[in-house]
Image 1 (tube, one colour):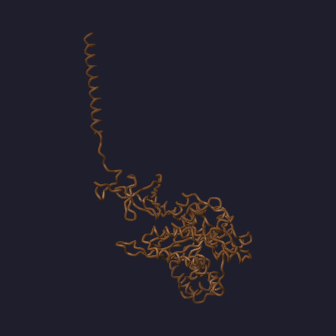
Image 2 (cartoon, one colour):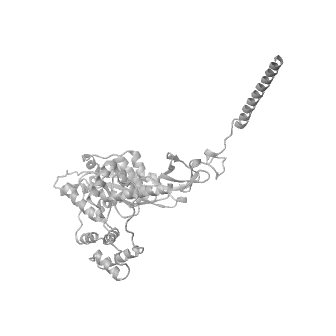
Image 3 (tube, helix red, strand yellow):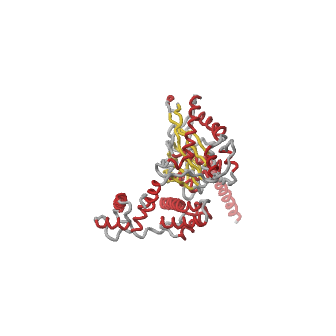
Length: 471
């Protein structure tokens, strides 16, 4: 029962994320009504949904946010099952498309049927077309790719702050952070505003896993508010399901660069080259710890980078025919003079969006094991499979959820000075030193009551005998 509910919940979350990714381009403030209508028709054709459905998704999102895109129930299954060998057929279809890109879907189906791979009539054009598109081999995808290769690249810049951000990871210094002073590679994660070139959040980490990217995005949103969209490369840290889900919940569109298209991230790449001067300076400063490195980096960003005239800003305005002061414009000046309002979000909403979720089974000691540590839950959950929500950057507390009970916080079990190093049960269930024996007290009370009853019985018998004598 619980497993079924959890599966249903996950399906609803996944479907909401798919729907958001379908309609998110329509929320671009730069679109006028005509462009939005044209884009809506293009999206409807691409994803094989009706215009009416797109209007419904848009209205639901504007009314209730991400939660409004969740389907009610999963009571409808696919009416036409795919052939059992569909994966093989799709592989062959991709191969046929690669051999001759101009082949139509109908021609591909005909070839598969003539070669005996597909039974005539079982493979539908719309189904194969959709799966070819999802695999990157749709007709429009191939056309856009060929057109892009033939055309020259153009630079772009959003007209206002917080319309688009770019993010990337750059190698930092090697610091003696490992055992016995071994050198460990550090990495700089940064998010930069496309228009003003302000660094919204950045920092050096001792790894480049996805959680450090999520941490940087979370800090940027908490300090400056939500931006409309973010542009990232195709590294696994930037395209994780957790990051896309978190940004979607906050109404932020997640965009990927084309593969081998470094020019589309020119702002962050130019900034990365500028970082080299900081690395040279800090190397001469003989930095030894990560905290020292980040301390000097934050000062460098605030006092130097943000207050230094930026050629990219000058170039943008001059391309618009706007005269720029001789001294130039700094990133922070440009960010502050922009009249576009910032969209600040509630801190708890941002925190919840970036939480990770996993499942664990509660052992006989009412504990769960997570990341090599034991966390204490409730005795009533022994044997149950619970859902945990956690911040990858802070594992000192987990949020435990289970149907029928209020979510609660679990913390690592602390081992006392005189405790067994591997206690069978959590502290809350260990015996305590009693002040008195409640059993003995209860027996004594019961004994007093028995004596009183016996005394009353004796008194009554004596009274009864005296009464008999009078008779």
